[in-house]
Length: 77
Image (cartoon, rainbow, N blue to C red; front, side, top):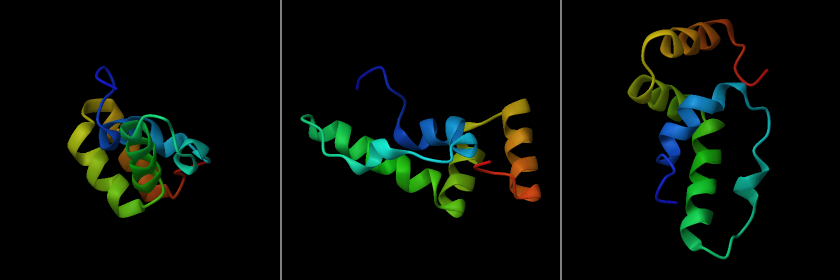
């Protein structure tokens, strides 16, 4: 988990394009992995949390694309 970005950052970078995140439904041997995966799921599928994460972690073109997806309602498609 050391090389992994925090869950909010990961969700910001990958969440808008995801339609499913089943990894957040499981319990892993490493409790830190379980917590991380559940947080990713929480952020990805809560529009307010995802917006906060995108605004915090995305820049430039990534942020512009996220804003377009928000406004057009095309997240998770």
